Amino acid sequence: MAVMFDSSAALIAEWIANANSGRVEGLIDLYAKDAILLPTFSSRPIHTPEAMRQYFQNLSAQKDLHVSLHESTLRVQPLRAEIEAASGIYRFSFRIDDEPLAFEARFTYVLDLTLAAPIITHHSSQIPRNLP
Image 1 (cartoon, helix red, strand yellow):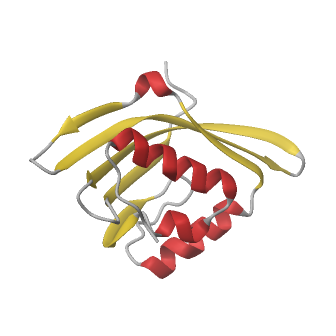
Image 2 (cartoon, rainbow, N blue to C red):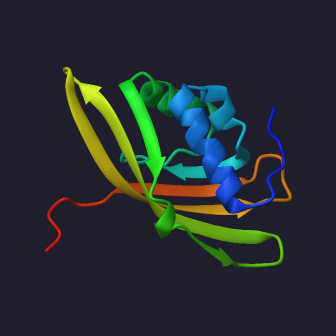
């Protein structure tokens, strides 16, 4: 069951804690029923709880999955009285074929912290490695 959050930072910390612990249902509970997820490791938008569950199950199955926030990058923008956008950079690390891999990703959440399931939209994409 989702809890109310007093800040975007607290919500993001809970999202990361759930991801790091493999708590798929905890992740899903953070998203509104009609939320849209543009995930880090898929090219397809996700807009149903069932598809979200499958995506997070696949992600949590990665060996030694760990997500960490680059805290200095977190920015929060008020959009309306109860709606805000939170964006920044986090890092996903896990092993594939026993090789440690790390992926920096940028994210934007659109949140309504008055809701028990505050994530309305979540976009996360890998930062291209070939930036000049």
